[in-house]
Length: 544
Image (cartoon, rainbow, N blue to C red; front, side, top):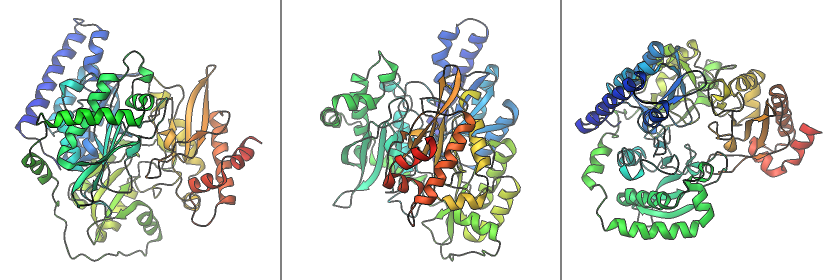
């Protein structure tokens, strides 16, 4: 994983001291909240319903045990004993005191972490495949390219005040595990006919008020021209993106309004100009970055297979582990979705335990997933049983990856000042209703996502079943959507009818699963059945 050099550390340390002075002036009344707001947002500090929330960046979701342990310590020392892992591969603390923030940032800087550009109208945390560097099906490790883009985008003066926030994802597999086409820019590392490495650019995706799937803007950009092409994409957006209406300010609106062909023409024109400027990093710099992502010490010659005599362990291993590129290893997903729990939350003790387990069993690496779980990417198959026993004892052994219990949910109206409805209690009720592991496995892959407002932080548009909380004449109301997918078969879920109360939406979901079980063909997932038979049978059963 990438390690700071003296310039990286100096920049982060300088930002901490700069913000320390800004906080002191705010607390002394020397600047107003309106003056302070853009300063704190650039350091990841939001003011929510009850307290400040701090969002900490975890670039492309990768961190080590020392960093993870500090995240647990911050939860204990400065919050209420827990942290919330987000759909952008970050962590949020919901009960932060303003006066503590500079010291939290200083503590983070001590382990090569920060909260820079986790908010504001800038290029946000670069996300990636949570199995990167371990996946059996990846072309290459996409993280060196993600790191190259992170360095290019950090403190980029031209893109510091974009029309709106900007999100980039990088993958290197035909299996999309990062919702790549639902980003402002989605990049897939590919090869051309000559076998050369390059990038396919999708531009103009996103969820929120106007969800859109990003079209392909260029099939192949040579690897070392990727930064220049991204620069061209951002320049066209920065030039023409709307600043008069924040609801129409995202790049997806620009691409939609002028058309993908016209946007592509302008990007290609800008790209040709940028190539004359020599902005690309030299090959040696990319190789320096890539060296940090070399094989972390995987052993060769290990046999595949492990003792499956404990049936509970076998169920977990089948559900929550993934194929690894190296024989004898598995990538392990730690579910942060216990039955009746809060999706994405982990206690300080659980966070520290995961740090210890990464050091003991995963070559000191962890990943945060965009589905609000944690990955140990490099676990020997011979260690799986011992690992599972420790996870299970700590309440982290749920075998529900990609099942209905593996719910994505935003913080909702319990915390967020933008929300219209609560997400957390609803997620807990659904999780409790479908708590039976056998029932979840019978339903099979069924991705359920909940957002407490139209901003879609819970990715409801990408759920096989999506739920959107709205305010209906002062009452929380929940709209039901079907048919979304964030994977390679990206699709946007559609509202199926009038909304429900909190209890009513839980009943409606149960009814929908009953329709699915009766109608599904062999091997079909919920979304496959829905796509085949359409919405009508579900509507009839739910609404009568």
